[in-house]
Image 1 (tube, rainbow, N blue to C red):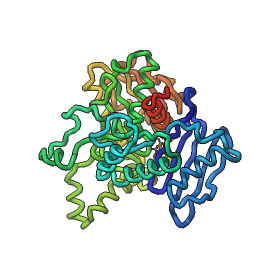
Image 2: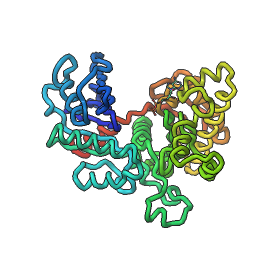
Image 3: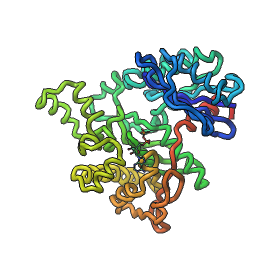
Image 4: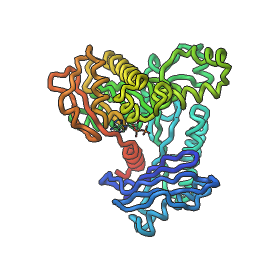
Length: 400
Ligand code: ADP
């Protein structure tokens, strides 16, 4: 049987078809430019077969889901005999607010709950809902499950999630730290527990998700107790285009000094800052590394700032745990760049972290990259958010 994992954007639909009990990704697809005049495009990969940017008729998300289902059941990429083999849809939903701390089967009440979180994630939640409604229409009767990016972080204690603003802003506007990438932090924590054969409830780790967007989580006894992102995914460490933590007074300063509007400051900090803004080179870490190798001054400096900022979080989180079982690197940069893992760990001298020669060999695979005498072990564990969503869906539908 199969679970179809859906990650829906305002004009895109990413999906994976995952088989159970094998937990294998059978098909991966992306439909872009949904509803745009230029016409939708479909990219699909199934067992080495597939197509790229094929023009399709998808003027809305329901048509896009229908096109995906039909490509999986008929034609050269067919892997299903019938749509009935799909036993559930698992949807990535960005914001679950304080309402959702675990996956839920979607009904009218849940849809209302997700809508209530729209103001906390205005770009993402409405799009996620569009995907949910599209799947409900395309395959009525098949259950839909919502898996929230924020859910894993709902175990944070009040001392970690509150901001020191007047309390009414929390009570009335729900302003607090929520955190994101929860599905990834949960997946690598769970995978680590299995790897070292320890019950999840006894695992203490610092998880370091470094992709275009990056965040860290402090996990105590298998539960998240702190994370670097905040009310929004702008907070925390330096990212591809996001500035991460800054003096909050800077927002007002820029508005006054530069005459910038709230929208302009928002765009500046979310889309034009970080690696891209400081270096002026690119938001892609590989380009920054290349420019730094050519001695581009700002690229050299932003790499140092980036690594130092991440290390500060690792030091702080490990410092609050009674004993840290591991620091776990994951996502594009964390999994693939031994050099950057090394620079980060070099900034964690006080923790007694020592990387081994194996660090240079581990790229995109699971492995221990610290030496035997490292006071805290360091691991690389590739993340798999789609599988985590599929597992959460299958468990909830008691299909596993
Ligand atoms: P997203 O947040 O979009 O899911 P990913 O987890 O795919 O991002 O990570 C993308 C980032 O990973 C990019 O900055 C890319 O440059 C970086 N990356 C991928 N491979 C490498 C590598 N070998 N060395 C350094 N950075 C890498």
